[in-house]
Length: 158
Image 1 (cartoon, rainbow, N blue to C red):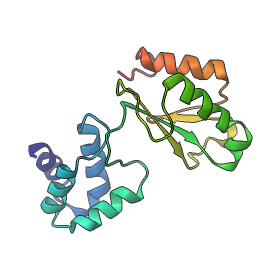
Image 2: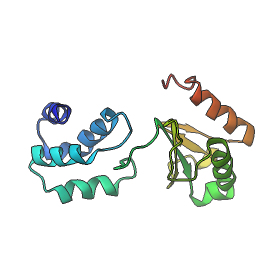
Image 3: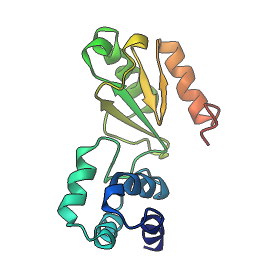
Image 4: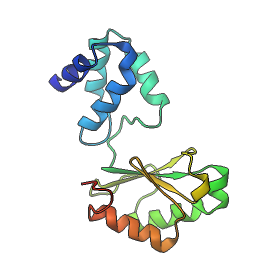
């Protein structure tokens, strides 16, 4: 719980910084999620009702209350991406990773999620892995992309 207190102290115990605090705590968790105990501690430290904190973290897609992989792969499900082949991208990822949307690979490396538009319509079909958007994907380029993340070669994400 010291990690929670340290993060909150750095933000001046301000309720206005709840989203930034939760983002940092999620990153610190090592499993890309917010453990219940940490959420409860944060609510207590900030003097906020637990329901309000959970309301925020369940509203925003960037937060998770379940452990996720090191790399969260988001496939856009918007109209333009769908028309451009995002459904095929999902099928390729399911085959390559051996998981369905909402699941995490056994090695804890990847979580596959469907997402609302993340602003890459001009390069559809696209995926977002962490903060990196990859577009104009083909079956081969997507397979190469997964290999590069597995090997830790993409954008220095180790």
